[in-house]
Image (cartoon, rainbow, N blue to C red; front, side, top):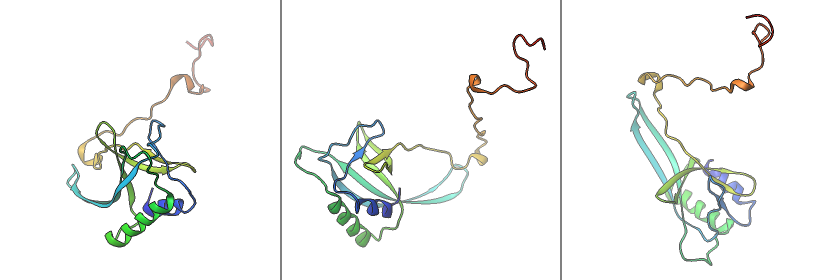
Length: 156
């Protein structure tokens, strides 16, 4: 999800809530402690130079159980960040403390913001000799072909 999408959604909400990939809710007394610009310059394993820009939200919970971040306040923080950090409409990466700091994508289900799982990937598979994955099928769900031999049909 991109930054301006989040800002537009916040205009329609009174309260802000986030759900973890396991369905558990980030405690309602969370803080957005940082909004930042993250630029990553890197060379993939195939030798291609790449640049990635993201907007980082850091969510944090503490012992401040009375804290509640309303949508309007988060919109104000986003607008200030756009102005001061010259943020573009980049993808959002959310940091949240679990056993270690987790990095998540962001989606919206119409009511809650969803922290989505992220994956590593090889960006140069064709240069690394990584075979393409074969489609996995469940044999019991395959439809019978007309020319196939079935038990009891006498074809074998």
